[in-house]
Structures are given as C-alpha cells and as structure tokens.
Image (cartoon, rainbow, N blue to C red; front, side, top):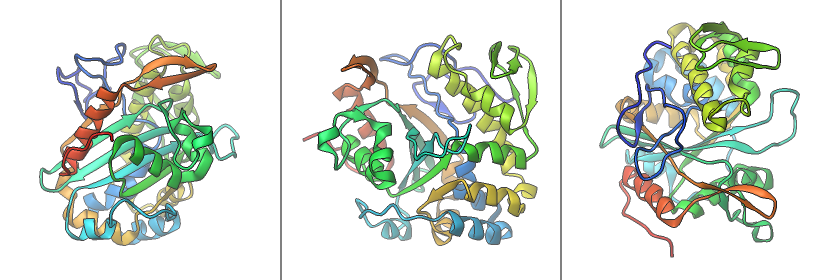
Length: 339
C-alpha cells in the first residue's frame, strides 16, 4: 500500500505508518496496531469538521445530533470547562461486535482506545487497551475480575468509562462508539476501498494474495479484516489488516464530496453514538485543529494467561503505570500512582 513506510525505530509510531507484525512488544521497541474498526468512521464525526469548517457544518450538525447519546454518568471533570479553557481533552473510542454478520445483541467492546488531544503541545496520542485485559468491572464486584471488554455488556458506555478510569487513574472526557456494521456501510457509501494484502489467505469465500492490491466493497473488506486464526501473527496480524482498511477509508472519507454527502454521514450516525454534541465539535474545530496533525500511538502490553478456564491479558503494575503516566502527561496532568 502506498505511503506505508517501514517500522520506525521508536517505541511509538506515527499514525501514517504501517506496523510490522510479530513481536507484541516488551522492554525494547513497542509495537502497536491501533487501527481497529471504528477509527476511520468515528474520526469523521469528530474531526472532519476540523478539516472543512463551516462548509460541512450543517451536514455534520445533523449527523452528530442523530448520534448523540449521553454516557449517563457524572464525568471525572467538567468537560465543558475543559473545552472552554482549551485544555487537553481525552476521548474514549469503542468498537462493538454488533451490527455485522447478523449480530443484533449488545455485544462487547472489542476495541478500546484512548485518544488525547493537546492544543498546547499540538499533539495527539492514541493508546490501545487489549480487549482481554483482566480488571475489576466498575459497579460489579461480584463479577470481577473480568475482561475489560465485558464492561460494556454489564453496564454500557458509562460502566466502561468508569472501569477504564479506575484502571488507569485518568479522566475520560468524551466517548465515541461504532458497531462493525457501520464500517461495512461506510465503505460502500464511499465506493469501496483499495488495499494491498500483507499475506495470502482465504476467508469466507474471499481470497487474497500477498502483495496484490484489491478494490474492496464493504463485505469483502470485512472478510479481509476479520480473519484471525490463519494469520501467523494471530490477532496482531488481524489488527494490521484492519488498520489498512480503515486508513484507506479515512483517506476517502475526508474528501469534500464525502463530507457533503448526507447519505455517508447518515450511515455513520445510524451505526454510532457519542456524547460529543455539534457544539462540542465546533469547539474542537476552532481550538484543537492543529493538534490532530501530529499523532503518535502506543498500546498497553499484557501477558496471556489462562485463569479459571478463561484467557486473559494480565498487565503488570509497571506497564500499567507507564501507560497512566503517558496519558496523564499528554493531558498536562500530574503523575498519579495506584493507591
């Protein structure tokens, strides 16, 4: 795929780089595969107005109003004050496994990512949390510890926010959620995406050859992105393919024609929800625009363990503290350790 340079020899990677497969990370170079299902879609709702301003305002306003849903909890801090004061903000992005392949149940959040946007440093940070991270679910001590992606099935977005805040000692200011069905619809709305396959495989009737470039509709892109167990890198390889698809979608989504297309925006709004209002988006556009151009990524690294018959990612205290420090620093907050 063009514009995909090799791995950068630093622990965190720029958003326009393709991660190499293999090693999960460790004390050396950290490897991160952040681009899951929702990212290219939700980023349109959150950031496309940043790129096109008033020209797209009315379409964005309509779509964001349709997607709006309160988290139903009292936030850790006054989010309106944060925006008004132009302080760094955090947004939790969630991807659910509903809305595709006939799924209609509530599902779990198989993607959890924390984004911070800092207008002072003009930088954006994305940190991914493993979906199988073992943690206590906020408000459900009798069912803890459990996998972090179960928080959504227990108590929805509010419970997920509280669980992540408790785990990492960080404030979550806003959230945005997308189900997998939304990705398929959005790809079809932009006329498909063009992606080069990083490996050869067959999945659900679709065939791909390493090094060959394909123009995919939504259904084929889902198949390309979903295969896991035949990938030598397992879930890490799947995340790489998901990242390729979403990057391709993002490139097409930020065009003027797409932004002005109500059908595309409605396809996003119908498959997503967020507590960012149209007014919040305007504030992001006016005060945080330049901060989205310099983006770095990281992930929280766990170790796979079988506990009571379940497979968990167990995150050590030093790694959890590292991620906490990184996110709090990006929010211009003082360091905070577990009590």
